[in-house]
Image 1 (cartoon, each protein chain N blue to C red):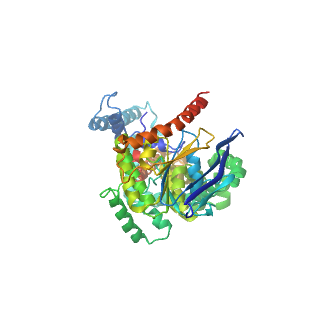
Image 2: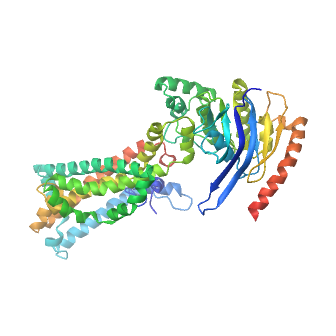
Image 3: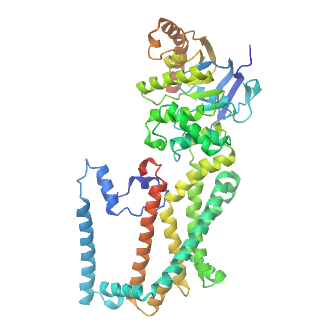
Length: 265
Length: 291
């Protein structure tokens, strides 16, 4: 087997709260993500999923364990990855095209070449005609499309996504999921997708990684052997989907309840 | 509250000039039209003119009947006449030019230093920690007190006025810059870093635009202070400028001259304010509330 795109090796992440207390958000997590696969990470809200993704992005450095990217221990920002955030991450003072062309510009591409490339990507995510708008003039779904173009234009080998469609309404979300899958199908990049929605995880991914209630530990990894290309709206009615859902939910349910009880207490 | 919605994002302490203009009032009535009675723009302008006429008329009549002593309060007609004389004879232009040059220099120099120090303090925690009490002490100092020292150091020419204006402008820009760097959304910052922005890129594409937004928002205050520094400096000791004209008039108990100088100054500030508002609307057009 070839080197995994992302490998977590005994990753533990602790934070020191302002009060001086040390919080462990993730404990001893190990798993591999093979190149070209779509892996979803699910777990109860607030269990430390995002923290794990930030470790893979190189935005934070785990005090114990390590993250390997294509076999190399990650130090600093992950050069092979881009990140799709749950919140708005576009620069509010730059227009759509100026935002999309940032990646190429940061890689020292000439401005007019970067702009031409950005215009192609804007067309590809269906925003032709909105090039000169500012982010605040767009709907939430459109801003997500801009973010998709922004992260995809630099042709990264790994895409990290932290509940990217969490803030969208259900219809927009399904449209975005379908388009994401279509885009992924063409390019076969490695995707690490965080969500708390198990249905979304199964509908999109090749593998579902279940994390326990905080501090997050690895609870189980499930293969999703549903045929591709998939239609995210229809696949939810597929018997295979429902079987998987029941199986994984049995695992996840206890953790969600534990997390909920811990919060309540 | 007559504040426009966009003024909510102004740094604390910054005034909201134009808050009393008809434009602002109309916007406000539109925004809350369910709970407030709409007042037409024409009616408001009419009322404003009426207010002016009543105030000036009362003043004129009171001074004519000596209820207000014209020696101390002058007359609106005399003041208008004096201003017309100043403009017609060209007497006022060199003074006005001097004051504006001082204000512009103070603004430019204060802004450059404010941005430089603001960036340094925001990026280097040690600097901010060590100098925090000193910055507070300096900022707490009423700057007008420095005027005599600046007169001694820099003489009666424009340098002492510029220096006074700089001390006023510097702190506004400094705090805006500091805030602008600190208030950058961490998600936006992380996104840029994930797109492989170098430190230089982050400064140019993320920090500076954010800082500029804060500085533009405090432009009204900083330019107003630059002018205040110039006029106060001139008043305390100079041979040219609007402050000098006012001081001269005061020296010979010429109340009309003092009032004419005051009104001229506020007219200049008003014109500058209107220009800034245009500029601000254009430069901050990416902001949701400015649209």
